[in-house]
Image (tube, rainbow, N blue to C red; front, side, top):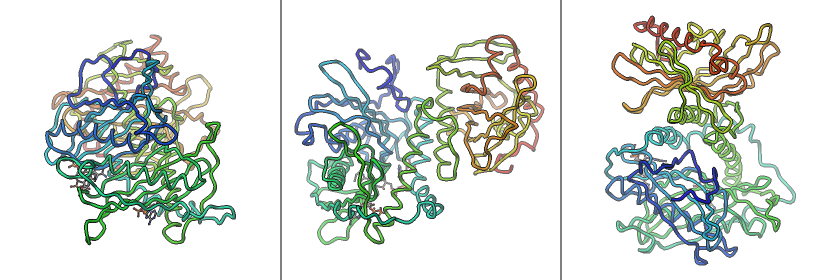
Length: 565
Ligand code: COA
Ligand code: ADP
């Protein structure tokens, strides 16, 4: 693909890193280009999202099959946010590649760009991650970064249903009861039920229905339900993560049901449920999905939507569940987003977003670890200081080797309370909460940088991960969070850490490479800028002290795993 005339930055997606210089091309990478014809469009002349989902699913499925060497089925699709609609006459370019193979499943990254042939401009429409399941897989070569980030997303996918249940059981009181509004639209008015017969063109050679075809039918009924709410055309903005629960085949009758579950100021949630049957057999649940729609006025602005009056029992339950899903959707969009500079530095921590924050914490560190444009700024006593300046953000890393086994190094560095033994910036450190075996919340206090000034304190989430395989390092990721129980006090300036932490790589059974990363926020910058500028070498003395600390404790049983804290 050419970068000529491309909207710089817009088509770049850190979650789906393309090989900029075409140095290495993932052998599973496949591209599909389609001109949008009137037969693919809705009555507004925009590509129907259902058609787009079919194209995305087939490209991703072919990529998965290329890797697996056998036929694959769509198991699930993560949240998709559509950034633009696509008009008739434009070209849709879809790129799919396998990021990681697990045992029988694979994560496929899909990137959709829209191209205007007349102006040679391209812009990103959306990206997605789909999981395909094969009968037989073999681990192949995949880019290391996507490979390890895929593990983080997989954790989230598998825990998704549990997160919703937890949120609903813990916060029913906060969600409140459905209120009665005089002018509310009865949800019943938006109900759609439609049947489809699965014919050979809808299925693969093994007679299984294409996941993309089912998604297209789901989008169709959801759009009708959404448009019935205020008798106006609705635009699909996002689809939540969903899971194909069971297969469907040629000859199945698919019953698709949709209804508006809840409306918010400018958006509404439509739920769709798909069930299959053949002859007199009982219905099989194939899929349920939740989609967010908007209604745009003539001026292109979002219209304010009417309230909905849910049906008793199930309707009321779905109304409340839609509120919980809205929160999860926002958490995922803003916390998981890898556009870290756009995200507020400290985000509130609470048990319901814990899994996203933890994944985000680790992913951000992994992304920093894969950058290859670090500049060596200073070296002393075999401790190296590197910097990287990009998009007005300064990152630094400190690298050194120690003669301590990697696992012991990991345990010793994991307990932040012991950091004061080698880092004078860690004046005080207390555990606020041991969230689980991998995550801990700490309060850390650092001395003032200027004489007589206030010290700084930080509320940090530390997320630890053991390696997924021999190529992976141990990780200890740190980021700031806010907690209602630990608000800033008068005595300290509240400092923030956007992304920091250690990667610990086993080079041999006795030698370990330790890399410390930090994306310098204004609060952290004063501690390191004198070193970067060459005015001091405190990084070297701090990390030499770290090395002594590790070597002095290399046989210590006190380096217990964090779960034993
Ligand atoms: N998201 C992503 N992957 C998932 C998943 C989800 N929600 N649920 C299960 N998986 C993965 C598992 O991690 C496992 O992968 P691994 O072997 O790499 O560890 C794999 O699916 C099989 O897991 P298992 O627990 O044995 O299977 P299951 O009984 O949960 O079934 C499917 C999972 C996807 C195979 C099953 O639900 C299915 O057949 N769905 C229909 C798929 C289909 O026909 N799609 C086309 C459209 S109809
Ligand atoms: P849940 O009821 O827990 O949301 P389901 O899988 O039964 O889960 O349904 C998913 C969504 O499909 C529902 O939230 C609802 O929006 C829609 N739906 C389910 N059943 C019907 C129905 N009979 N008529 C219209 N829409 C339905």
